[in-house]
Length: 291
Image 1 (cartoon, rainbow, N blue to C red):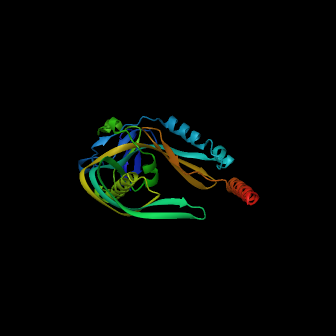
Image 2: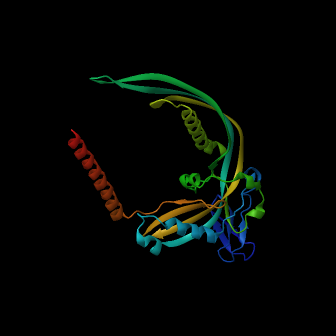
Image 3: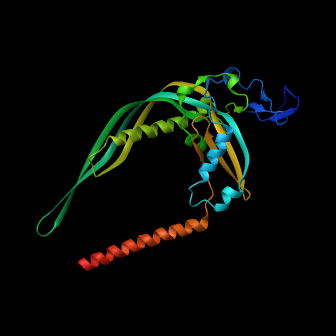
């Protein structure tokens, strides 16, 4: 933790080691922490906020709707503890990937004669190769932020990215990275490898079954940049438990976990099981009747 004085009211502020911009809790004045956005810590770019605080709160209210397993008391009793606009540090990776995949595939042929039904299964080895270019694959560089939330609020529209300026920051909190580009590259690499494998798999068609046997992906990293991207973080509390939501401050996409009404979930599961059993019994009776 470190201490600094508000430039407006002189109150002492306590911030952690990664906070770059904060707001004074006494006068609301935005305060830039010296050295946190300078030199190697200075971002290359920023996407400004488009969604307001009020829009974030309304998006959370809409998120509660049409959730049959959400406890009815949650939306009524949960307390919105904090709504904070944060410029989150992201590393953006650009790379070219080459993939070579091998698949085990089968085709099945069935025929009958006057007495029997026959099935013939043919086995094949299928290979696919291809190239893909990835541009600005994001990975957040802050240990404060839950990676699953940050991944889920994508995509960001990079056409609205601007060269970094502190003029975009007043009124919001901004963090500097505490995970460097090398630390986060594995996350971007895993996403690229999975995407290449999926795309190669999509080209294999006309078979009854396909199974991936191997997939080799070679990645040539061409560029990495550092950007601050806008995120609204919403923290609610209900029955002594915290619930965290994140909203893309540019597009409005909101994600977060909700509690589940166990009783309603059990009733719903029982209803599905009963309906499935009834259908199975009906089919059994029909088959017995035909026989």
